Amino acid sequence: MVRTGKLPPLPSIRAFEAAARLESFARAAQELGTTAASVSYHVRQLERQTGVHLFVRHPHKVALTATGAAIAREATAAFAALEASFVKARDQDEARLSLTALPTFGTSWLTPRLGRFRAAHPDIAIELELSAEPQPLGDGRFDAAIRHGLGEWPGLRRVRLFPVLFTPLCAPGLRDAARELTDPGRPLDVPLLGRPDWWALWYRALGVVPGPPPDRFGTSLAAEHMDIAAAVAGHGIAIGSPILFADEIAAGRLVPAHDLVAGDGRAFWFVYPVARLQSAKIARFRDWLAAVAAAEVAAARHLVERAVILDP
Image (cartoon, rainbow, N blue to C red; front, side, top):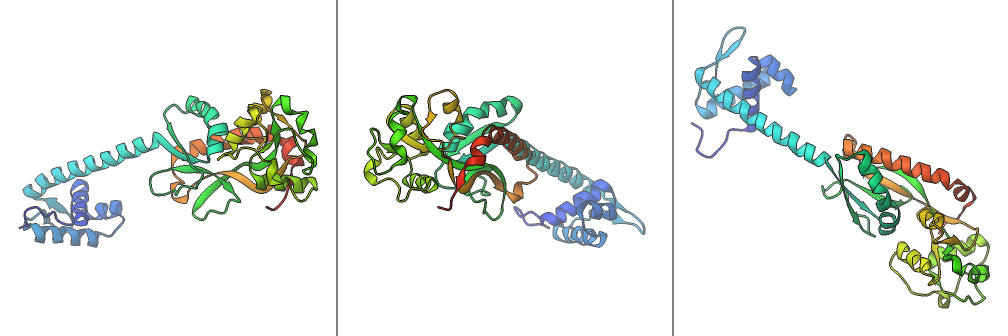
C-alpha cells in the first residue's frame, strides 16, 4: 500500500486520470503527447505502488474496476480544480500590466497619456514604477519596460518609439537672455540647466568646441524633467527633448532657445521578454504605445529630419 502522507508520482496519476476519463490508453496517450505503452506503464506503476487494481484489461479494451472508478472521479475533480486555478491566475495576471520606465519618460510623457489606454482597455490595470536604472524583466516583477539606448538587449523583443533628441529650451521671458547662447565664451544672464554632456554634444553639432565651461551651469538636478521644471519657472536654459516636452512647448510654457536640434543616436524603446510573446496584455499595450509614439514622431518630423546626430 502507498505510505501515509506520500502521494504517488504525478505522471502516473495524470496518465491514470486521462485513461479513465477517455476510457482508452491510446486516446490518453494522444492527449498527453506520449505513447499508449507509456500510459500503460504508468498505470501499472500506480497499481503496484498502491496495491489496488484500477483497470480490468481485455484483449482490445480496458475497463475501470469499482475502486478505479471511485479514484478516477476524485482525480478528475482534482485536476479540474487545478486547471481552474491556473486559468484564474492567468486571467488575473492578464488584467494587470506592470511597467518600469525612466523617470523623465514616465513622468513627462507616459503618465499624461495613460488615461487614453485605460479608456480604450478598461480591463487592464496599469502599475508604473520609475527607475533611472534598467530593471530586470522575466522574474515576475515587471512585464515590460521603457528603456533608452541602441536597442541591444539580448532576450528582449523591442519596439522603437522615438529618437533621443535635445535642444535648448527656456521660458518665453528668457528668450532675449538666450541670444548669446551660441558663444560659450560669453557670459549669460541666466545659467544653463541639464546634462553637461548633452550641452557639449549640442555645441559640437553647432560647430563650437569646447562646450560651455562649468561656471555656466546652475543648480544640478537629478533628472531631465526636473531641469525642464526649473526652466519653466524661469531659472535657466535647459537642454531637453522637444518630443518629450512637446506639450509644454505647445502650451507656451517653453520655447526653443535655438533652432539647432541634436541627438546621440539613441532612442526610446518598449521592451519585453521573448518568453512573453503570447501575452495579450503586452501586445495590446505595445500596439497602443507604438501608435501614439508614431503619431507624435510624425508631428515632430520637422525636428527629427533636421536633427544633427553625433556619436557621444
